[in-house]
Structure formats: structure tokens, C-alpha cells
Image (cartoon, rainbow, N blue to C red; front, side):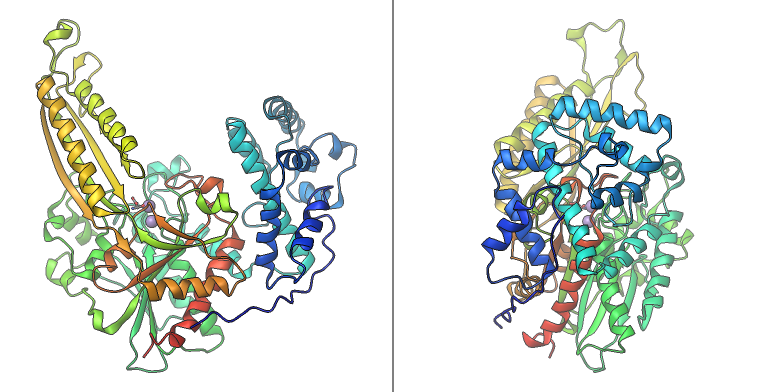
Amino acid sequence: MPPQALSLNLNLPNLDGLYEHSPWVVQRTLAQHPMGFATIAALKFALAQTLQAASKDEQLALIRAHPELAGKAMVAKTLTSESTHEQSQAGLTHCTPEEFAHIQEMNARYNAKFGWPFILAVRGPRGTGLSRQQIMSTFERRLKNSIDYELAECLRQINRIAEIRLDDKFHVQPTRGNKLWDWHEELAAFSEPEFQAAGQLTTTYLTQAHLDCAALIQKQMLQAGFDEARIDAVGNVVGVYRSFNPDAKTLLTGSHYDTVRNGGKYDGRLGIYAPMMCVRELHQEQDRLPFHLEVVAFAEEEGQRYAATFLGSSALTGDFNPSWLDQQDAAGITMQSAMQNAGLPASFDAITKLKRNPSQYLGFIEVHIEQGPVLNELHLPLGIVTSINGSVRYQCRVEGVASHAGTTPMLLRTDAAAAAAEMVLAVEHAGKASGNLVATVGQLRVPNGSINVVPGECQFSIDLRAPVDEARQTLEKTITTALEDIAQKRGVQLTMNRILEVAAAPSNPIWQTCWEEAVQSLGLPIHRMSSGAGHDAMKLHSIMPQAMLFVRGENAGISHNPLESTTSHDMDLAVQAFAQLLKNVPMVGLAN
Ligand code: HGY
Ligand code: MN
Ligand code: MN
């Protein structure tokens, strides 16, 4: 089905003041698009492209046209009306003397290092304004960046400032994205105690924080108008919005709500909330789809508490490994007892009943933050996933001989940690030599190590990823051979326990096209890209067609990090794309 041609009839308001003291950005953009624009998103992307294509001198002149935060222009009251509004809304006109002095000092350091003023969209990713504390901590953090990174980040911030100013000019608000933002904030309130105390987000499988998340998502689903929302035998939260046709097939969607330790608020969760928002709107309009919509908040994808990655989606595909029930966490608690404590059946028999019958499903679609820098660099809010890289994970153990650090001569040692260190570098070297594959040692520890003992044991993890399985298998062979040679040379014992292997998952062409047409309907270009991160979609891939939509991340797309972020505008566009896809499904004959 060819995407319907969009009419380029967006009525433009006065766009003066969009880019600080720099009308050329708007003028050049309008001159390059004499036919006009279909949507505000299309206009924003064109403006960002003008900035991207401008000369470095023009980019620097634009950056230097911006006032410092709480700087001389504010004191002298010579800010533009837009900047006055923005800086006062962020409370920068009410700094304490200490805050004012701290900001001045940072302005001086920043200018000395970069040669231009620090630029930050102080109205923030939600559009309601960052606190002074958030502004100052961002300022300190960005002072550590490289020149090139900061130049790109300042241009990103300038586009973000323009994006929010456009809302004012068009009298629009990203209402869906704002609501999604608030849902994420509510969910992020639950974190495991020691992390909560440090202001960090960690919700690993079946901890109290994790159970609180499940209960909240279930409540939010019912409030949004789902016909049912239940917690299943592995802790997935399953919401169903039934079709007007009781015999219809089901479209499956969702993502995970568990997090890595000290993780971000949007990894997984955006893929739950975007479809939930669509159901909320369908329900408000008393509208029903020609297919059932099943939204699953998967209980476990990250494999943090137990080495049972994709546990939630594995239950749906019939891949739940019964041996996982006997796995112990760091405190020696088995998964089965954690399930019992959570009031779950805790039996393999009950879990096997969760397997979905693929013949009743149209497919699986997932929205996820990109977790990388690509969309950020392209100034694109949405991307189309063409394939999810396959991955393999190992837990490795090196056994040497513990001995006295003071009396054991260097040449008589069998040092497990030194051997592991050489192995870690071998993993890195093989990854670098592989081209576009990645190899990571994310965990490295000397169990019960002492400062005055030559380590007798050292444990580390390995995570390998590749878009093509054969390439990953070659890298795997290279690495295992290299590590065995090191073990041999050093006289240590190496055990490598493979704990995960997931094949690369190419997107289903029809569902990928559904995403592409949905994105095009927003007036945005299509950018196709593979996923370096693993997702639940790669598990569902084994039993039904799947395709994913990526959403741009803030802070150059950083993820598995508290800096992980997106904006309410980008989340709003993800919801719009999802809603459009739901409309397109019947047209591509998938809903019969
Ligand atoms: O590791 C991954 O790619 C995913 O975030 N679990
Ligand atoms: Mn993740
Ligand atoms: Mn994820």
C-alpha cells in the first residue's frame, strides 16, 4: 500500500525569534522548501538539517549569539523575550548568591575551554523547566566533554530550544508525550532500597520494587481502559484491549519493565507506555480495532538478578528453561523461592501454560529507545529497525593459586586476576579487530579478594554482538582460543559458561513497512538501522513476525545509565506513529 501523499499545507505562524539573533536558519529553511511542510515535525527536521548543513563558522556564530545562563545579559536585562521567559521559568533569575557565583564561575570555565557559551534548553525534556540544581549539575557534567561533543550537543540543545518555541508559536503541546513522561516518572519511583538511597534506579526481577512496578502498570492499564490487565506466572503484566470482532486475531506488543543496576527510566518502559497511550485514546473515543491488542510488560529482559535473560518473553515463546527456577541470586535465593515470595505459582507447569499459539497472532511490534547516538546525530526523532543484532554471553572463571602478596616471588605466582586482566584485553582486541562487532567485559571481580593476597580466583563476563550470526560465531571462536592460550601460558584454569545465545533477528518486511508508512505519515523521513541492543522482539521473532521502532535518546543516546532520556516531543511522535500503524494494519491485509 503506497503511503498516502501528504499535503504540504502547514500554515506557518511568524517564526521570528526561533533561533537566537539568527533569522538565517528559518529564512534558509523556508527558501529550501518553497512547497511548504506537511507537519510541524517535518518543519523541525528541516530546520535541524539547515543547521547541520551550515558552515562551522555559521554554527559557531549561532552558538555565540546565545546569552550565558544567568549571565551578563540577564543581569543587564538585555535578553531576548524568549530567553528572558526561558531563563526566568527555570528560576535562573532567582539564584542565591552562591548559585549565581557558581554559574558565573562555570560560565568562565566553559567559555575558556570551548570558546562559546554553555547552551542548554532549560525548559528541559518535559518542557516544563529544569530545576536550578539540574541545570548546574548538567553544566558541571558537560564541562568535562570534548570540544567536538560539546559543539554537537550545543546544536542539539539549540534545536531543542527551537522545538519548544515552535510549540508556543503553533499553540500546540505534546500532550501524549507529556502523559508518557509522567507515567515513566511514576514508575521510576520504585527502586531497590540501596539504590533508592543513592538516587539511582534499579528494579531487578521480583524484588519488592519490581513487584511495585508490576502493580502500578496493572493499575495504569486498567485506568487507561484495557478490558483486562493481569499478572502472569512469571510476573509479566498482560493487558488486553479487545476487538469489536471476538474472533479476531491479536496484535502483540510491549517491552520490559525491569532495569539494569543504576539504569535509565525509558529502556523497555517506553515500549509498554506507547501502546498503552494508544489504548487510552481508543478507549476515550470508544473506538475498537479489527484485532485484539495485547500489551505485555515483560518482567525480566536484562538478566541482572538471575542469568535468565529474556525470561519474560521466553515464557511466551515456550523457551523458559526449567533449570532457571533453581538458579540462585547473589544472596542465595533461588528463582523459585523468589517467585513463591511474590505469590506466583513458581512451577514450570504453570509457566509452560503461558506459551502463545502463534496462529492466533498477527505479529509482535515493539517501540524502544535507540540506546545509541545515531538518531541524535541525524536530528531524527524516530528510526526503523531492520535487524536486531544477535548476542552470546559467557560467565568466565579463572582459577589460580592464592598466596601471600608479600612472600610470593613474581615468577612463582599463578595470579588469577592478572590472567583475567590479560584475557579482558584479548576480548577487547578481538572486538576491535572484528570491524562492526562488539565485545564487552561488563563484570570483573575477585571473589573474597584481600589486598595482601595474590588472587586465587577471578570471574568475568563476556558479551558478544553481531548483525550476522556467522560473524559472531567466528569472533566467539577467536576469543575462546585466545583465552585458552592465555590460561595455558599462565598455568591457570579457565572455565567459560555460555549463559545466553540469541540469534540475530531481521525485521519482518511487512511489519517493517507498516512502521515506515506510519513514520512517513508524520512527515518524517525513513531512517533504517540495525539494533546493537537486544530486545524482547528477538525472542518473539522465533514464533511470529516482528518489527521495531526506535526513538531518539537525549545525551547522545546514552543508555543503561541514569543520563538515559528522551523528550516528551519524541515520545509523542512515537505514540502518533504507533496509532497510525494500528490504523494501517487492516490496509495491509494483516488484520483478517
Ligand atoms: O543487553 C541488551 O542489549 C539489552 O538491554 N538487554
Ligand atoms: Mn537494556
Ligand atoms: Mn531494553
